[in-house]
Image (cartoon, rainbow, N blue to C red; front, side, top):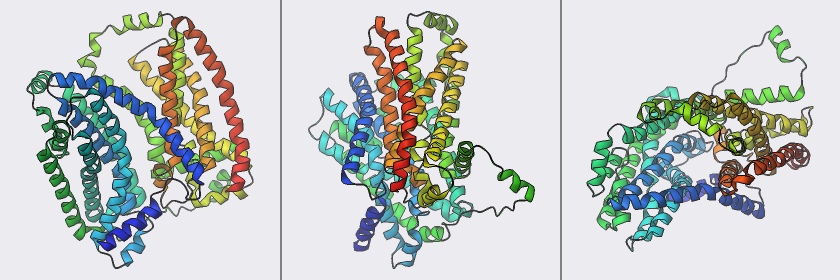
Length: 550
């Protein structure tokens, strides 16, 4: 136990930080405040959703079902994100070779690293459960034990999905040597996560479309009968849900026992398999490609500096699995998902509407063009920063950031090239979204062209803000590439800021009087354009000062 506690303490001090460790206290406090404010719109949306649905579930005696759904959502998020986190901490961290040489048992290393992972995932659990708890408290009619039991459930909930992802990783690394290559593992696991996400969406859609009569019958039967659906993946969820809503301590005890048994299974299997799978896991691949004289001349010809630098950054993003999956893959996948899911469910409801009539009606609405402008401005904030390229522009350089100091190119041009790459990816994402939507909802073509042009303005603005944030305090100390994106507080702040600006922009439309809607849209457009251009210029001038301090 003493070795476990000591190792856990060391790992937390060395790895549980989202900045470079040199930031001043006021700057860290500022980042956390910005992060908290940016997170509020999403938390508020989740709260109002649960608060609106909860009375409907209470009328049919299914309050525990609503809680089970939210617990299930939290577990799914934790499981998906931990598939990236577990390999990087357990197998691909730079401290592994040192730990393997120390007089430590495998259960000490597994226990300490697992504890670090649990602490990382508490943020996902809290982001789902805190608004849910608040909605239940607002509705009333809950047991006196709701809050203390809620804290216990929040502490225990991430353990079971983390056990599943850890066991999956341990077995894969031990019995499939093919995955011991870090780049190969990251790429394939990323594709697997996308597949899991799509499968989960199909599963949730099937619950509401395939057997509606059975679903209604199960709802009306009472006694939280639908909670048995969650037993298949996370068996502790039904017991935790009933313990919270009904105040049943016996259910809480069963949920705790299931969680402890999962931990025992993990430690028992890890005791025999972890060391054998960990040896040699720090390897990476190299092509050792030789260039011919002709190819060398092609690669070294003189060209535009910014364009050449942009292509260099793009090739790094494309060839590095951690960067490709976190920065480029979702730009490709998200529009496809937007197109595929409605088409698959078209027979269940879309065909019941006359879309041609509906589209003509919408296009003839007063101020329809104003709605397009507002939506385009909001979408640019969200999809423009979704790729995280600008938000990690400096952090991705890592210990090689000094190369930026001595290449024959000004800091202004380097930052503008990195910024334009993020903007280009954001524009491609917005164009792909518009193309997917045009196939589903065929408005007049010029509306989609207008959407793409206007969203480019806010895409430029949010990317300029994100790259300045990364310039202020980049995360240059990391063990592997994924940490520059996943464990970067600045990246998370930029993403939440883009999401908050998107929600605020679109929600603002509902509070503007109809007679002022078009005028306000034009004012917003005219105001945002110089702000975006000014932010682009400011990012270049700020780079001249910030880079000298690094």
